[in-house]
Image (cartoon, rainbow, N blue to C red):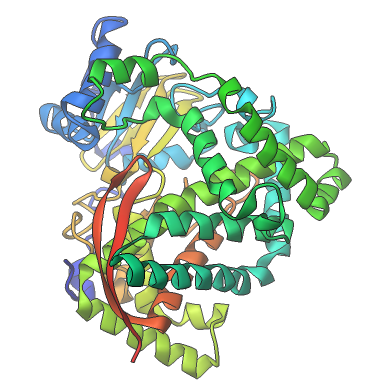
Length: 491
């Protein structure tokens, strides 16, 4: 649980961040990759079954007394030709992954392996392109322009979608005494994304009211299963490892579902696809990119982020609930409604969203390949990374850097208030600094500002309607599970 702390207590600036590399000692990167073939498999088994994800990294940090070290990252044989990475686990070294003059981001979205392009219509979608590739600027520039064009629909469209979630939440609580937020959130998130880009309710298409989320979930699983563990006690670890982490599951098993998903977007997103053709993007390529943007980036992110946001606000307790409700209701009354200007005035609400993004970022991994020999630094040392070496950053540890954040493992609702705003630049969830804006020349999420806006709206809409609530929490393949146990309507 969190409690209010002073802004000065929340700010802990790193001592070496402003130091030029020459002032720090050069240290050889510790760690090794073990024997060929067997080393990667041992690391994979440790990662999924022997130690678990977080302990895998923390144990090596302790062993090498370093936040920078060498290891193998799953999946390894036979899916990844080269699983060897240099791991970055602090807020300072992590930033090298955002420097596109030194880091190549070609085909590294999912790490040391890339799913078959059969899952995306034979195209390498924008997320897999490096900014140096000509098609990257065309596609990302198009996405940014479309999001700017749709900005007036963000708030009213999301409010419409989330109102349906609240209705279902209350009905389930009344009937069953509990309600799964994740299931309702999936439906709400897909509904919002589809209506935003297609200007049509998905229930008016062959997807129906709930078919879209199920198809996208299956499509995501077939691409990302090499990075997952099901955690099923009745399935032996070695059997799961063989099935999930050794070979790519064939696209043919979900081909009909993807075709139905693709056709629903193709037949509903006419204006979007028309605009794409006007700037020279082929209609089918634009649609496959739209499915990826809507399904992988937008829906996939909301699927992980919103339950995490609710979880952390719930566990923070009733005092925070009262403070959020007071701030939100006062600003909405003063502004005469929910608007972008109103959201910008809600300082505590904004801080809560940044803190949720910091403590449980919706994307855990960042990868990139060194374009040249690079001298990087953490808080204590310099390290030399050679050209073509793969660099890996694990965000859930890097954004809990104790040399930057006070009580980094604790959810502190006030962390980014007042002087704490200086720390916002260390919130890295979007493949960039939170203080940066996405451009065609970088790999920062094009919908970064939209995600922050929607996260604030989740909190605002919730506390306009309810005073407090309680939940049970757990873990899923993608993020946290949240089950509502009680809701108290606003008085």
